Length: 291
Length: 284
Image 1 (cartoon, chains in turn cyan, blue):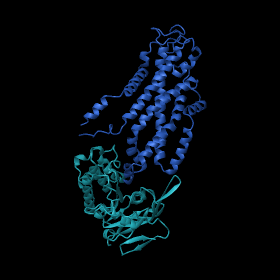
Image 2: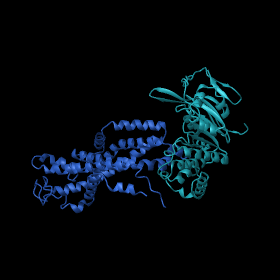
Image 3: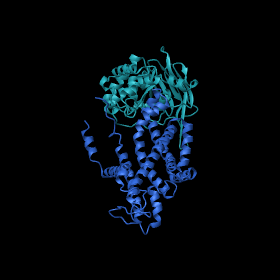
Image 4: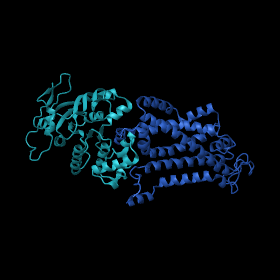
């Protein structure tokens, strides 16, 4: 891999306690993301993939572990410097309805990060926002409209424009299409691919849908109960899945022509987290967690 | 483009109409009090003492022969003034505390919430009473006391609204844009909770008026001979058998005002449905 690493997560842990119960949402995850690459993170709900994404953009603090953004370790920074470094990481949220402020025009929301940087005039911000709108396929006359005047797909375009505004290196896309109609999903995925190419973005693409991830990503990390249980290139994962959880995920993908008759696959018992687990490399790029 | 919405708005439900109507009457009476009142509310012997309601004195007269109608009408002026001042001050301070608690970090949040809970555990009348005992009776002090007694309520309301908003992705997205907490609250959070806060303020208004009447009744608020409703009740209670109208009419005025603003607050809350009140597109 020749491209430089833009985001490195090392041994990230995050535990939530609720009602006296402690749940390790993320239990020691290490990942790295190279410039211009798309890394897919798949797993079921509750596997910790969203928490991981939120930690990667600074919305959530990790209990332990190192986050390095563009070579700068975040834990050494505080306050404004920390915020500025995390400015290279932006996010596209799952729900395009709740992720836009209903009381501000979309142009203001897209331009908010430019206002926050405080080094542009109002005109410059207006020009830049208009350019972003064109880039994500929205019309200039839609600039001063409010979110409720847009469809779900258009709102997600606005959200993408907002994420692109501060010129980020890394975009965390947390289930960016799962709230959209299937026909719109493809358009948004295409748009994400287009802007990735033109902007040289690195994506951390979080999804529960291994089919979408396999289509979009060159590398995949499979998460289960807060750990990465298997990682590798898309080929490694799809053709040569080693971990029982990965296999069950692949099994769950509906396929045309496959008959749902005969004996059902018995429910798999997944190994629970334990101290004895370690990552074993199958090939240079393909690792699997074994007990 | 909004034809169906408009039509729905035109047909307001009964409680909305009633609340709006009563509140309008009360406010109009309060504002126009000097014009409406046929007598100077302080003028003694405007008629015979303890006279029953008649055409000359619609609500009768009190023990000093003062015209009760004029006194009740002028009382609206006082009560609404106290209520408005107390609610505005309580809302400003309480709202600020609630927003700070929600957005100034965990430590501040924990400390402020404990303090609010502590104050909230006292009945607000008790807080107002204690404060008046400390500050001394009078119109201004009673207003301050009522405002302070409303602060915990508004702080809690503002806090819970702000916390609900804090978790929404659009607030998180605004955080990712790199803006500070101050701008986050002002530009993103305030416009979204302002409406609900104002609705709650309307509900607090009636309780402020009730507190004001209560304090005056106990002789701790507005002092006689000022025609405050609670004060009229207090002085009239010695004549309850001989001249019940001294108690009935100010009592009815309090009831009507509280009912009016409770209904208004409730119906505002119903109307504050965000889909109906989404801002219209600016310009084109």
